[in-house]
Length: 95
Length: 486
Image (cartoon, rainbow over all chains, first blue to last red; front, side, top):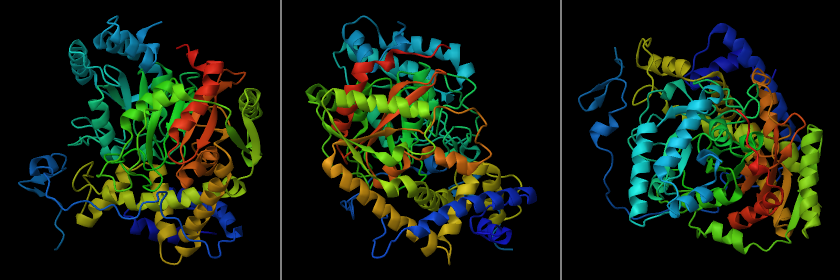
């Protein structure tokens, strides 16, 4: 087993996802197949090879630090599921 | 010929000559949409009223002598770029009601070029898929055979172009999502070099691989569209300060007699014989017309690209999709018991299975104890794959290969086997890992009447050369003149 049901549950928790019981079995089995396929990378010699993090030759993209207009509060809140005044409302965090 | 089946340059000639108006073109396209959209389902959202206003503005501009690159041309937009005031769903339930307060840079640029927007095209959820079957809004059908998939993830855009429900479209390509559906729907799909087109306003899937590109009937149309959307944008920090040539003018200057590489590993097991034969015939055309054809070898790209891609892309996706939490925008679950449960429930209800699978995989490969074995190793093999391409492109102007190992498969055929679906991107994925430009051009049909695509891979920022090579073949064969009967 490349990944156990318990590990899938742990990762799901880290990713803030929940699954039904029958979904857990299906996902665990599919993820095992996929991770087994990834094993093939172990046969590549990567000694001394730098990891590639992106495909550009750019490093830093600096620009002048100038204040520019940004979205108005009203626009920023226009898609909010539960806006209240100038705020995004969520269920109570601290009991 | 109906107006809806013409190309951008043919329509622009008619607009310039005063033979038709932008309103006429839009009316024709919408008549076509009314006829066939029920069968194809290429769109998630239609923008008819706004399009009529854009067409009226285009006609007013033409009367004032102001004709720009895309004035009056109806285009479909993959539903992954922000368009101010129109829902941008990314094919997901979690964004089913999201109305962006701003335009993506490509949308701004298309507006400035005078384009008309027909609507937002269907796609795999968050661009994760190769068949457009993971969309929350239902499947899109291939216009050449309604029992088959159009490819993905930009399947709605490809189907809309092929079914004449728009004149051209934009897609996005993270591992083949423009080129593969273009091949399967018999159109031209161009994924530009990473960094040539701004990603500002494009919902992120895998940021180091995502690139916006064009889907059109002809190479000339692809060139016109690319010219309109390319260029530096300070709002995308990976956007490159490259000169944007007049790609259409470059086509006219095209010389030919290129040196073209054929990666031998891209013709191995898994390649459908009919697809292989059509691609080899296209290669013979280049040889017969004076090009030097060289066999080259890309062993790592062929063997390891899919494994590298699904480690890197899912890792990036797990981070990028953390923003969908039901708090500031998008769908919020009504079941949440407390603030943390709000995240769990909103995400569990809002995302489909493929997105969840990729988030889980990405989170796993980034997690403590697995990072070095999976993610870091994948990044190192990515370096080796890029180096392999750099070496062969030193001696070759471009590379020729199939776009997809098979023609369009049946709806549902691979949807229960994620790994089988991943393997369909075998020839396109390494191009994204290396950040190179790639184009798919129609190169024939199977005996069953399904389109086949030739992939041409170019040097970084040499889109002009890539388009010229593609057009050289296209002009000799004219596959683009065939339209599906719907």
